[in-house]
Image 1 (tube, rainbow, N blue to C red):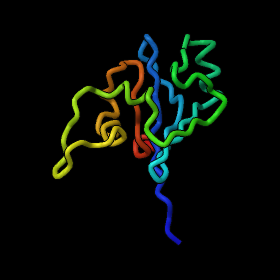
Image 2 (cartoon, rainbow, N blue to C red; image 1 turned 180 degrees about the horizontal axis):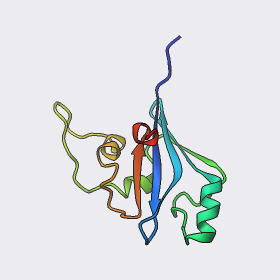
Image 3 (tube, rainbow, N blue to C red; image 1 turned 180 degrees about the vertical axis):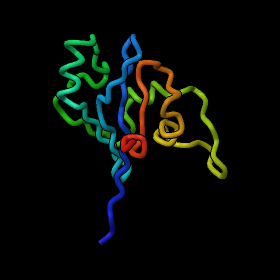
Amino acid sequence: MKKIEVERLYLMWRNSEGKTFKIGRLKKIKNRFYFKYFFDIVEKIIDEEDFELLPKLPRHNIEYFSEELFRSFIEMLPNNRRLKEGVDEISDYERLKDNLKNLNNKEFYFIDESEEAI
């Protein structure tokens, strides 16, 4: 039986004082994307830290699904479309992985599983 590859990135939010919170998980399974906020953490920071949910992902009690990377995350990507050898254009997801902490939105960034274990 072939093992299904699951890639995970964790969405981080930085408040105005620089404190960071792990607020959600983006999964990629067979070119499909799933995003889920961490309900308890988000509930707490909405009340205590003035956190606002992403406008295009407005519910923190469900798991979102999409055939392509969520627009909220695409809009955070730098505008440059870097080329990889032999490929005219890389996917938005590859661009996201290449720019985990270099997003246009300074309140949000991603970490990957290897950083999550640290």
